[in-house]
Image 1 (tube, rainbow, N blue to C red):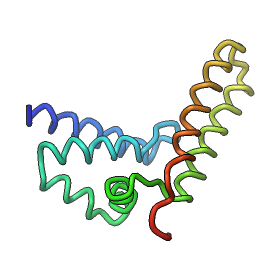
Image 2: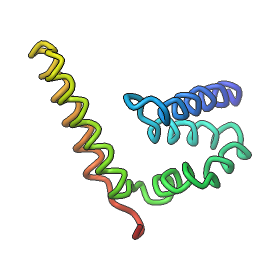
Image 3: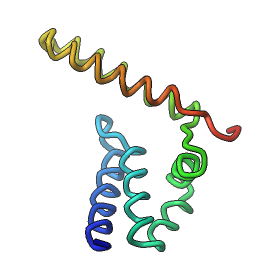
Length: 120
């Protein structure tokens, strides 16, 4: 089972790192999943993620407080709105826009209802 968690952690870490350079792929959710998988399989990799100067703070904020910083919330909701706007501009069918609106609304509601965590 440890090997499965390790493999999943590696997959999610890879997807998260791709998200750094691909604007449509989110980084933080994949890194949170990687951290969770590494916590079950590799304490060394988990500690590496927690100690990373860029990726560590949001992961620690989530693990310790179940929180998302205000800055991350603004970025997440802004990205969701931008994706919806681009979908509208490229002329997606209304049925797809309705589904997208519902799913983005659920995602935004989740993000916005999390605590901010410690002062930034």
